[in-house]
Image 1: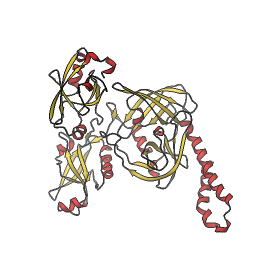
Image 2: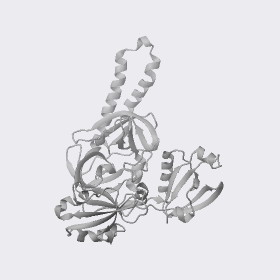
Image 3: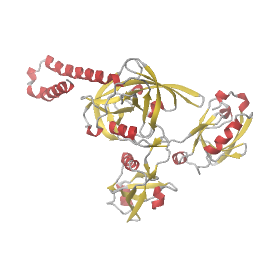
Image 4: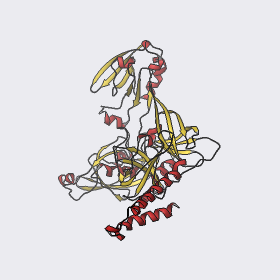
Length: 452
């Protein structure tokens, strides 16, 4: 029925303006065209509706509790649901409301901040109406699409638009983790509460999971092929296993190539190499220009092209030997990089009992905060009005000692937490920029709930 109606609609749209002279275009004929489109939209949204769910999340960070909401898509009859990572991030409790208004508690099966995807599951002795993911590589720019969500738990929301772009790059939803997506861009409106809902075409096929809307006419959808990969890919220690070589990159422009005396060279410039990384072991240096990797020519004059290179690397199996060509001092240098396993990109965060949360200093945080080294832990949250706040502790400070006992990393800090919670006062040694600071915390003034 949908295919027949779609064929009729396409024929009408293509021939209506050509076959009739200007004087012979009755208003009723034009109205029929739009009514056919309207009926198709209603039919498609009704068909996908049972698979679209409303999600409510209770989350906590330190002493700050919040409620969040979003949408999700049932992808298996046993109750697996795809949604966005940012919808369920830090969730303590997840509630899912189905189209028939039944509610269930859901648990997280896997989450992946680098693609903004999460897989959650309802456990119940019933079959659920599952949607099927299509091949997103077949999407065409200009194709009409519907963005569907269930942000409030009452009924679905539907917006209509076109695919306005493919292979789009947007920065991460926070500064710490870079997204690994070639997004589908659409002008179909994506409300905040519709994040996690599906984007479908006029054949009713699910092209992807809606992630974020940036102003009017700029919605970004995670392609369904990325969704399939993330929901089935091997996990290592609770995270998706990805390839990694340990380089930081920047676009290599034609102006740079001309200045360096290699005007015909196209590639990607290495701005930094992580110590003890696969790239460092292979001999890659800062300033090298990578021209090919794993047998494929690479180039990047814009940030989104670097994103494509990052996807090439992360798609490789750890242990793979990638033949690489770099240009160094105007000479071609062949290198073999043995791909490693990507370390955690989302820094581990822990409570301290001192009115602050702290994170391990990953390489990304080391660069972001321009730290001298990675010794200590980074203050990531300060409880407003708490002991640390009153003592002048700030987000971005590096905690290096408590009562004179060195804090080198999260492991050394976590051994001190039980003792610190029983103290009336503690003295923190902090590094702020190039300067050391001391903060005396009066813990006896604050209840445990106020001291994360």
